[in-house]
Each structure stands twice: as structure tokens, then as C-alpha cells.
Image (cartoon, rainbow over all chains, first blue to last red; front, side):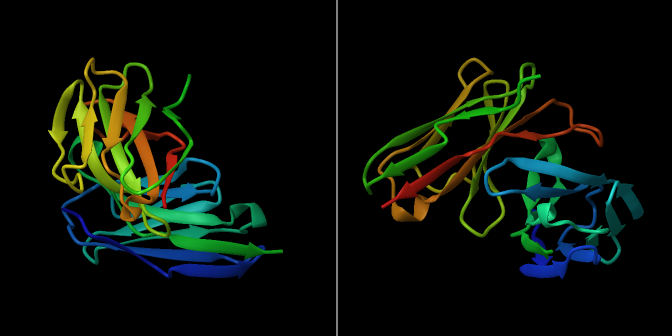
Length: 110
Length: 116
């Protein structure tokens, strides 16, 4: 079973500055990684899905995967206060089962 | 397209009471998942079904928890004799089988349970 850890637990950035979130996982054989955003009153929103080593960009969100280092990161370009939320890293396994980290709480200050 | 629907959205119980959560997945999705998300933690898988069959319920916390999906569509998660440690948000999700890179998992908005 995948063990997924995220860092930092919380992050505060100024509007427009780059935000960088990190995630490590225990089993490097997986090839399906996702970043989700969770607002307090909303459901989970998938931001980026990445399946091979390297970089995947979706709008202002860029994921970097390095399976040899068991590491996937998320970079948010020009974050806005509306991006304040909990960001969850997830690794997909058999039957599309998702193993989540504990989340990073991002606060974007105006 | 309607999303994953869960009810109720909120529940407050006293210890020892029972509660049931209901989930209506996206039409046609054959795989359904229940996750538990304690406060300040990520979602943790409880159980999942393909059609009406339980694929894995090994992560259900105890025999106080049960889940069914009798016709392979809607599902019910039940907690008998709730405890304060059951306080969490319960998320339902659905997807197609077989899995693949482009297969998405869709989540409902969850049921927030507080046990006092």
C-alpha cells in the first residue's frame, strides 16, 4: 500500500509569488499521480494528472515527477487569494484507488 | 452531467447512535469508493465496489462500519454505535473500470459527521 507524505503542512505566499508544494511516495512502480485542491465548502478538484517522469502543465499549475527519487511536486504560478485551499497529492493504484497525503494548507495573501 | 451526489451533507450524533450515508454515483460508473477524511488529514480509503461486489473492505475501521451496493448503483455506508473518533468527512467517489491514465475519479461533496 502506498504511503504518501506531503510538505510543508502549511504555506503562506504573497499574491503573484510562486508556490511550491512537495510530495513523496513509497512505491516507485506507480505511474499515475494527481494533485487535487479542496476548498472548505467544495468537493475535490483535480488540478494536474501526471503519468511519466518530467513536467506536466495545466494552466498556472505545473507538476514535476521524479519516480527514481519517489517525488512529485506542484508549482503554482501567480497564485491568487482564491487559490487559498488545501492541496492534496494522490497516487493511483489498482482499480483507480487513490492514496492521499495529508495535505498542504495554502494561504495566498493579497 | 450530474456529479456524485451524497446525503445528508451534515450529521451530528451522540455516541452510541447509528447513522447511514447515501451515495448516488455518476450514471454508468461501475466502481464506487468510500473514503474517510478526518480533520486536517487526507482522505483514506474505507471500501470499494465494482458493480455490487465488494472488492476490498479491509480498511473498514471495525465491525461497526458496513457498506452495501445491492444493485450496483447507489450505495449506503452505515456506522453502528458511533464513537467520537468517527468524527470526519465521508466522501463517496465513482469511476469506470478498467482503470487507465485517462480514467478520472469523481468525488461527491461529502457528509460531515460530528459525534459528540
